[in-house]
Amino acid sequence: FAERRPDIEIYLSLHHENPDLKLVEKAFEYGAKGIKLHNSHSMKENNTYKVWLSDDWDKIFVFANENKIPILFHVNHLNLVDDYIGLVEKYQDIPFIGANQLHLGWKSLCEYFERYPNFYVDTSVGCTASKNDTMHEDDMNDLRKIFIKHHDRILFGTDEGINDYEPIEKVPTSNHTEWEEQHIRFIRQLSLPKQALDDISHMNFNRLFSCKEF
Image (cartoon, rainbow, N blue to C red):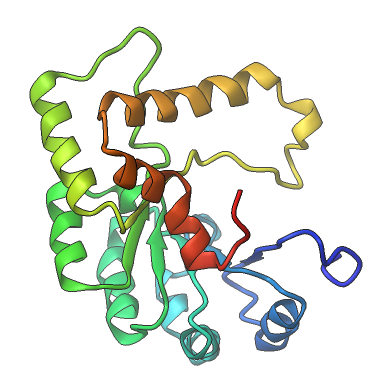
């Protein structure tokens, strides 16, 4: 697909049982922008989350590190957090983006922001405000300070996607719209200054994934 459609920016999702270095090299030869890894599959299939520390996965991480390739990582299990942080520390030229804020609180995330310059998170799942809901003023102010201070480490995300078991045409448009609106509503309630808003909404993504402006 990447060979046929060089006009479309692609991202490579790898299964935990498929640390295929040749596939990764070929994908980036054709212009892939980043890698997505998902840990829940390994847990559901009674595998071990230690799979990411194998020699075969090390080859993938070394390649990504040498080429400064961003990795969006769905950790989804607290047992993996320490190992994930170990990867962040070991491969310092990989921008690691923890999906769903790694299911950690902002206090822990801020500590990691300070410690590791290649540590990022997205806003998916955790950063939402339902329709007609307004965050408590104290919470809103605390979060606003965090988002302003770490505006270069947070990427807007909604956890939506297209996959082989849920074709986009079979998903009601209203589902996607409401989910997106919950994340947008959250960001709007923070009343961020323009620079912070631009960085979080799209500029950080463009910078990390070397994407065209949109």
